[in-house]
Amino acid sequence: MAEIKSSTPQEALELLLAGNQRFVAGTPEHPNQDATRRAEVAPAQRPFAVLFGCSDSRLAAEIIFDRGLGDLFVVRTAGHVVGSEVLGSVEYGVAVLSSPLVVVLGHDACGAVGAACAALDDGAVPDGYIRDVVERVTPSVIAARAAGHEDADAILAEHVSRTVDLLLDRSRLLAERVDSGQTAVVGLRYRLADGNTQVVAARGLGVPAA
Image 1 (cartoon, rainbow, N blue to C red):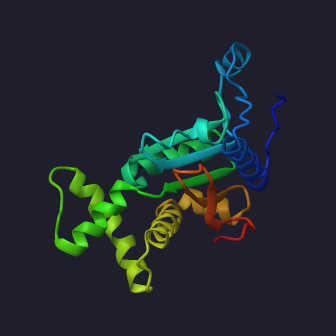
Image 2 (image 1 turned 90 degrees about the horizontal axis):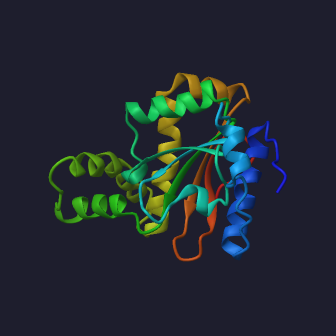
């Protein structure tokens, strides 16, 4: 497969979503996964997207978007919760590696979101640092419910959208690049059963959100 050079946020998003559709259809091309590509990217990397997603084992980015070596700069935490390490990693991908697209990837049946719902409903708060993850997800659940949303898909969409906004609120560098049109930040919702992704938030380009 000839590599497509993505230079704009829109082109990068189209490249990413095209790979997801191949994955869903069962026709992956497995681009950039051979020895030639390994040699090409060994001296330097220039990924076309920064992907910040949940750590869930069913959310392997290069597989579900049918990409390969050097294509995606991947950052993952449980519940895609944001901390200073995440912000630094995203800024590195954007400022140093020149990625034109940042994607926040959430998914249905997310354990962190479910735990936050349970904590609000019956006070079942986990111990240790898992509690910190749950507490960072809880504001999204509260906001979704305050808006009248109780179903799991709507709560997830709210959490993904709030994560997009949080990245922009906390990273001046990222916000400036979005304002200048150099970078876009897009939130995607992934369905575990069929592998489809859906845009639920977009900042910096004209993609309609669900």
